[in-house]
Length: 87
Image 1: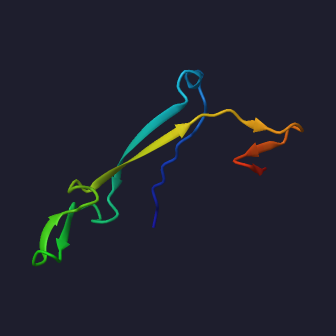
Image 2: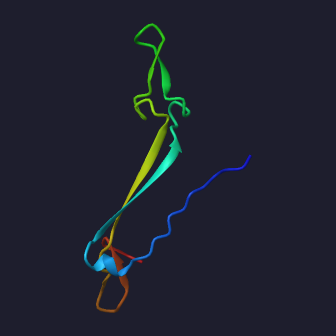
């Protein structure tokens, strides 16, 4: 079966100089809890159908991706250091 995949290409622009954070909203994902129906059986209330608590009954989700741009830190021999781990 085919699988649909979505990719986000990340590349800094000149606007990254003015804002160190970027945010991308990617809508249209089917809810993994209710399978996109927006409804679930509620075992607490006599197996009645209720709105999915995860997607709030819409059946859809959106991804919110936040990117933080920071300077690269090097040690005195120009080796890349990231979070205290030498790469």
